[in-house]
Image 1: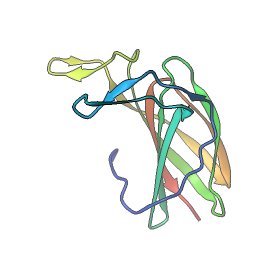
Image 2 (image 1 turned 45 degrees about the vertical axis):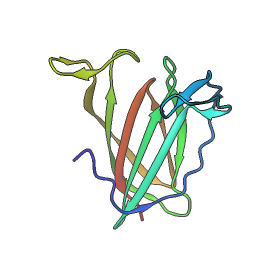
Image 3 (image 1 turned 90 degrees about the vertical axis):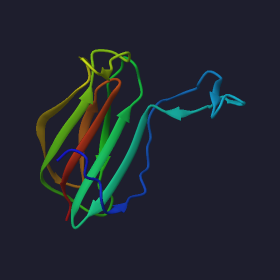
Image 4 (image 1 turned 90 degrees about the horizontal axis):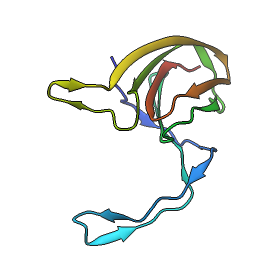
Amino acid sequence: ELVRTAGTSLDVLVKCDTYDTEEFYLGLGETTAQLSDVPYLDVAATLNNGEIVITVVNRHKDKAIQTDVKAGESRFDGLLEVFEVNGSDIKSENDFGKTTVKTTRKSDIKAKGTSFTYEFPPHSLTMIKGKLK
């Protein structure tokens, strides 16, 4: 089950390279914004009955980002399932009759302890699910 993130939303700390945006329009185009120090990794996590779901978007268009994922005061307990949504480039899309973005099941991560290391592919969404003690 790919889209199950029920439970308590966790406060995540993200330390990674950042980028500055070009000026862009907001809403109906009446206002513009320009952002600084936007992290390449956008992370959300939930905890529900001992199961953690970590969702990571790597915004970088061509660079994989390797990072340590830490459980804080808890411990990862066994195999973590990994799902990835990605396409061949940032212009990939899903539309009627055209599907170039795929969801794939990746190899499980063996994680027993307080952290593990993972490399998030460029322009991808990755979901990691498993148990915490």
